[in-house]
Length: 424
Image (cartoon, rainbow, N blue to C red; front, side):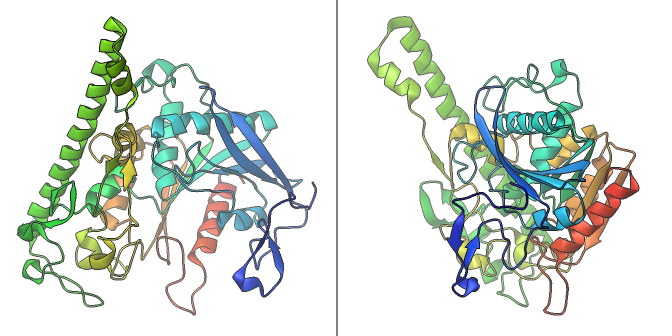
C-alpha cells in the first residue's frame, strides 16, 4: 500500500468543489508520498476488539500513538504534522469509540495495552503516546498503571467490577506527551455541571440561589461577561460537588439493586429476579455546561474568550442536547464522569508518571485552566518534565486570522522535544 489510500473511503467534501476527496487526504493537505497506511485490528486481553491505523514512513524509528476514550482518532489533525516530522503514527480507537454510553476507562486501558503490544511487536525503537484533551488523562492512567508492578495495579473499577490489569501485558511507553490536558473527564464535568438543578428528573427546574445565569448572582452575557462574588463561587463549587455525589449515590444504588437480584436468582431461580439482574438503567444528566470560568474571565484568568468549549453562549447551550455525560450507565458514570469516583484523573495518575513527560497547553484554552496546569506540573513524578505554552484555543485553532495554527506549532514543539531526548 506504499503511497496509496485504502479503498472504499471516498467521500464528498463541501469544500472540495466537486472533487472526490479520500478520507485520508486531510483536504486540502496531502500525506507525504512515501507513507504506508495499514489498518489494523487488535484483540485485547479480555477478548474485545480495538482498531487503529498505522501510518509509516520507511525511515521511521519512533511511533507516536494517539488515542481518546470517545473520539475517532484515525483522522486526527496531528497525523500529517507528525508524519512530516519523520515519525510514524498509530491512530487507535477505543472499543467504545463515538459512543460513551458504556465507556469504562479501565477497559480502555486494555485497549491501549493491545495497541502498545502491537507497536512493540512491529519493531519500533521508541513508542511514545500522545494524549489530547480527554486522551491525556486516559493515557496518563495507562502509563501510571503500566509502570507499577502487576500486583499493585487497579483490581476493580469504581463500580466494583473486576478488571484484568494485573494479568494483562501492559508495556509502558518510552515517553508521554499531554496536549491540552484537562484534569480528567470526571473532574472536568464537576467544574461544568450546573448545581442549580433541583431534581434530576426535571431538566428545567432551577434553584435561584445557585443559578449561574441569573444577573442577581453576578451573571452578564459576553463579551464583557459575569462577575461572581467569591461567596457565590464557594457555594456554587460546593453545590457542584454535592450534585456529583448525589448522582454517584444513584449509580451505586442501581448497581446494588442489580447485584441483589443476581444473588436472589442464584438462590431460588426466580424469573423476576433474573429480569432485574440484567436490567441496566441509563442515567440522564442534564445541564452540564455551566463552569463559572466560562462566564467570568477573572476566575483563573487566561487569554480565553467568553464561553465554553461547547458554545460561546453557555446560558443557552447548558439547556441544549449537546453536553458531556448526557447518557451513561451507572458503571460508565462512576468510571468516567464522576469527579469523585473516577480513577482517570491527572491528579491521581500524575505522581506515577516516572518517565519523560511533555505538557503542551494552549493559552486561550476554555477547558484547561492555569490552576489545572499548575497542579499537573507539581504532581508529575518524572524528573524530566517540561511545560510549553502555545497560542491557540482548546483545539489549537489560531486566535486571529494572522496567526498560525496552534495545533501545528504544538506538534513542532513535541517533535523537537523528542529529538532532544533521542526519541525522534
